[in-house]
Amino acid sequence: MNNVIALRPRVPEISSRLVALSTVFADRRRARGDVFWLKENAEWLGLIRGFQAPPDPAVIAPYEAYFQNIPEQLRFFPQYYRFFLSLYLDLEDLGLAGDGDALCAWVAERHLAGAELSDLQRGEAERLLARRGHGCADPELESRLHAFTNRSETFALPNMKAAYELTHIVFYLSDYGRVDPKLGDAAKVSLDYAGIVAYLDQNADLLAEICIAQRFARMTPPPLWEAFVCATHTRCQLNDRPATAGADGYHCFLVTGQLMEMARPGAFQHAVPPVGQVAVSRPATGPGALRDLSEGLYGMGLRRGTGWDRMRSAVLPGLSDMARSVVEGAEKSTPQFGSFFESFARSESPIGLM
Image 1 (tube, rainbow, N blue to C red):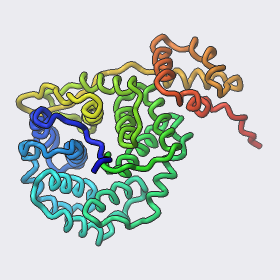
Image 2: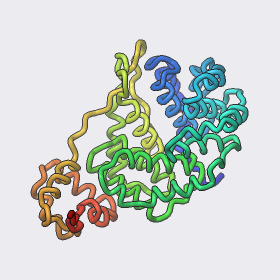
Image 3: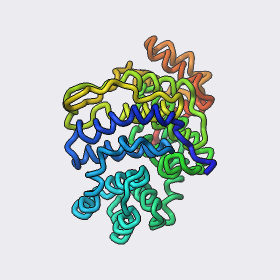
């Protein structure tokens, strides 16, 4: 298929890097089957499937025994059906012998997606079921997802939940780069705005997802953003200590590595502790400019304007040197910065309260 977005791995080299990491994620971080284990390994296997080439069988060998138990676990824990489907279908596509069609049919017959309150989660369920021909339960779902992505002003303000939902919608609509998600111009502006906010905040985790989504949407991410993400990935570390009870730096390590493998192959070359449990740490970054910029604009009150060309000289002198450098980088990274600022400045007329 000529519209597939491959991660362009050098297959023998990437496989040797992935074998050790699969063992880490399958056996050396979480108890098999707990919700954090399900989430982490579903994301990891989805990334491996995205490499568009059969991996070394050793990459998926740590999951073979668990794969056989997924149907029974799904039957007893149907509330986690999206995790189970994702794990099972990816492992089947990566070479394990199974019956993903029967698993999807079981989920579809029980309409488990009906328990979802969110269109985003229904979108994920639809994508999973469609992989074995059991999708299309809600013909209006895709139009609602596109409507969300087209509301660009949503993404010109700090709202991490909305920004992550935007990226995941693009992931699902594109089947992780396998098909064109057919985003309109407004949705592409939404990705630009969300990326500016993430860069201003120096949030490499979110910015990695935004750059990946842009690539899946046939866009070219700003080189400055990708360079920041790749630099963050290389500075992540795998440490010989237990993972925290909640999330550690795993997700940042994963998505920054995914983008790096797409942009400049050579990710996931970190030293792996030879024995014991493994925690993932991400590097500390500076505070960015988002808070300082927001507080400076808020303090201007009615003097706040929308035009960046006019406001630039009023805004930049009040920032720290680091924050000013980040803002100037964001300004130069994309031609959308001026229109982004019009919404970000929030200079509308005061609300006329009675």
